[in-house]
Length: 228
Image (cartoon, rainbow, N blue to C red; front, side, top):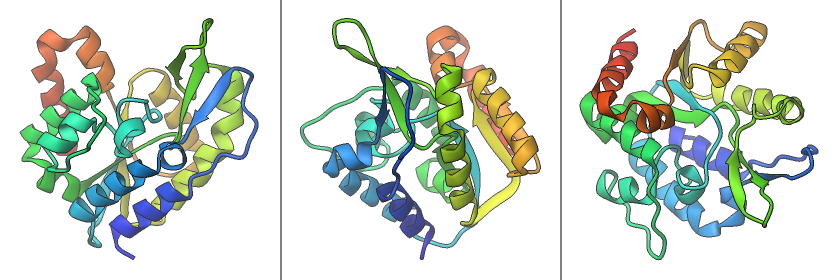
């Protein structure tokens, strides 16, 4: 199996069978929207259909407008079309985090070079939503409540081990989110020994929301970290 085959098979078979705290819903785009599987397959067959060894970058968990819309982390429909050449009919999404990530990718040398050397996943491979008063759903992170973190930790460990059986360079891992995401993963990595070194980087959403005027500083920080 190529790297692409392994990712596609992994995504299609993601199932969380544990019990979640009240008011929290699992978000599994690969089960909820069959069209996403076709988009996701096109992307990975285009950029990962080989046996190359790659470094891993971990986000938090999927959000509704990024991989929740396309099946690919930090890739909204606009970036999927403009940067990756894969058009999605009938649905449009714009995610600020995706803008930053593709700024980094462009600065690194473009999608072909970047995806040949890096694989973006998430600490928790499935996302969550929380029901607000009035029925509105909002994105929720695996670390937003101790009860949710406890409920999904075995799922996180199991699925990281599955991915690390692929052609992953375990000498280093980059974690998006220098706060709770990094703290959780560094503690977990110390216990489970997934990677030799963990490098936390500011989360793209944080950069775009609070540091947009100095965005290039953070792009440079990512590029410097990738040279380690």
